[in-house]
Amino acid sequence: MSQREVAAAMGVTRSRVSQIEASEGTSLALTALDRYARALECSLVITLRDDRNGVAADIFVPELPATGSQRGASPRAVAEEEPAT
Image (cartoon, rainbow, N blue to C red; front, side, top):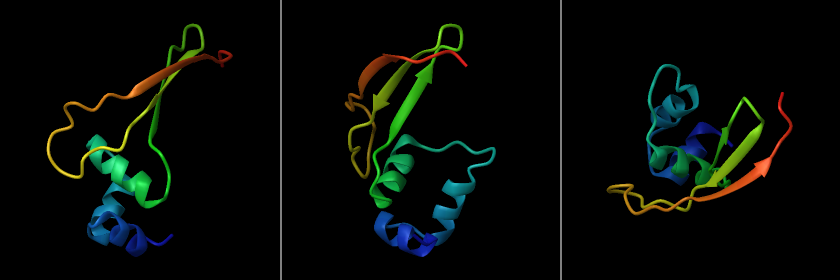
């Protein structure tokens, strides 16, 4: 998918998609990452891993509101054992 196609699906500029993809030294809002993932027809999953014992928890992020506060979103966490690397 081109940046222009992703931008159209997200309702943002191509420049904003470029910023999200580069994200070097910047902070991205969870809503921006969610919109980016959904524009690519993907789900947003955040993995937290305890490097000491290899236990990981995947947080499946529900579709977030397009605007406004992220409060009230209730990600569902699923813990799973993974081998330590």
